[in-house]
Length: 146
Image (cartoon, rainbow, N blue to C red):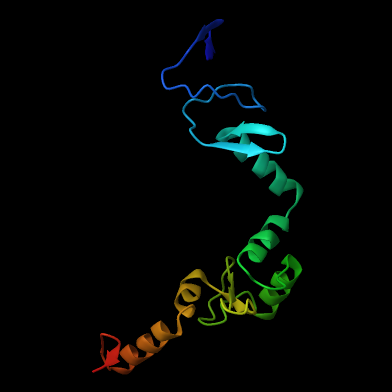
């Protein structure tokens, strides 16, 4: 139901669910989040998440690292590594403000901070060897040097 100029209208496609926060039926939002305090629409969920992140700066970042299996990473450790690396990528040495944590996907051990481009390459040693072989002048075909 939507109220326009004091009159209530039932919208076609309405899912008939009401958000516990704002009380409206956001029929255009098909995703709902069941939370501890009740059902919320996407709009209210986003507002709630942004408010939580503002109240807990850095904590969501640490939770993200933990969820990815990165062992022992904290915001203070990140800042320390960032300073030690002189605010630059450990591979290309370019100064960046948005370095990501590079870690071993098997052990979770942190290796260093990399720019996003180098981090995507550094995940597969076979790709690195192929790139090295290519740069030396050998061609790679079906995984073997030619």
